[in-house]
Structures are given as C-alpha cells and as structure tokens.
Image 1: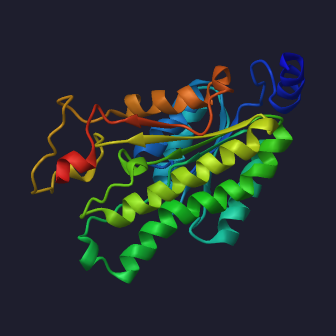
Image 2: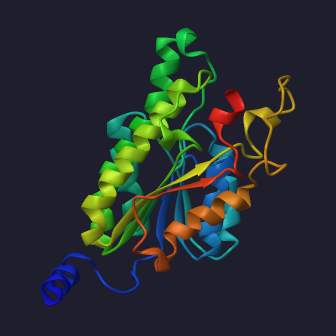
Length: 267
C-alpha cells in the first residue's frame, strides 16, 4: 500500500523546490498595494510588467524605481474588466518578458453601501473589478505559467471574506472576494501537478484604506493591533506564497489583519 501511494504521489505532485523564471505581472500596480508588491518583487530580482488603467505617470514611476533595482520593468495599460483586454494584457506581458511565471491579481474597487441601497452600477463595478478581472487575467495566464514549468498565482482578497458572514455596508465587495477564494481553491487543486500554486492574501484595514484618507470624516476602525496593516506587512505575505520554498502551499487564504475582522467592526 505504501509503495503504491509513493508511486502515485511522485507521479502527481512535483517534488523538490520549484525552479521558475523571475517574470511577473502585477495588476493595478501603479499605486498602493500593487505598487508595493511590484517593488518587492523587483527587490527579489523579478522582471516586471506594471499594469495600470489610467495612472500612466504613476506606473512609469514604479517602473523607474524597479529599474533602479536592476530589473526590467514595463508599464502596460488595459481595462481588465473586459475579457479581451485582459487576454491581450497577459499575452503582451508574456511577450515583453519572454515568459511569465507569477501573476498577482491586485485590481479591485471597493464600494461602501448598504445592501439595499447598492445600485446596479455599483454592483457591476465591484464584481467586474474584483472577481471578473481576476478570472479573466488568471484564465489568460495559465498557459504561460504552464510553459514556464512552474508558477504562482496570488490574488488579493479581503479579511473575513472566507467566513461567508454578511456585513451590511460592503456586501458586494465581500461576495466578490469570496468568489475569488472559491475560484483560487479550485485552481489550486487543478494546477498543483503543473507546479503552479494559487493562493489569496487577504488584508484587513491597511494604511492606504479609505478610513485614513485626509478627507474621511467617519470614525476610525477599532483595530486590535492598534494600527493598520502596512504595505510591508502585506508584501511579506505575498512573498510567502511566491517564494520558491512555498511550492507545496496552495489553495490557502492568509489574512493580514492584526486580528481585525469586518464582522466584528460592523456587528
């Protein structure tokens, strides 16, 4: 029995540390979390495509900062809420970098609205930018990751989304992020034999969250840790999944929330 299991295991799951080229696409990388992730990967020696939609100047600044770290970085614009545009972006990224081994799905807009007041336009924006864009880019990237011989898919989620508890003011957002988790976990099961892992990093309240905008007039969230998540907190979690030593870790959700959850915040 043990010999049979050993044969099946060796055939189905690659052994040892994954070896893959250092070529990454980060969506929504012109500012905020995406920018921090892109620069973290540059420090790790990854050539980059910095995706943006409208922030051309900011995206080029990220590329310049990455290039100063000794890697190649190219800014590409696309509206990845559109399937064809997402496909074209991924293909262009792979052509530009001569391959692709890492995809970080960071794009995702947030709308704070009571469930009963959420408009059709708000609902579609949240679903398109969070769930659908992740699906479109990931679907397009899979063949390139397989061609690389190993790969990493990391999607940015939201703390609490995996628990399936309703939170009135951000219902659409949590539904979209929960869908991202289910999609990621399905991919993890399918792609592990190709040496590709798929995981979710789920920040809570971060230092760039809307509550910390100078124009925010509402109450600050009650954070058990006494501070929001820093960009470094989040990028360390992303690197945990991308690190070649993590090639056996897949289908997981890693919260970066300092024990905070939206359910506790909103009751």
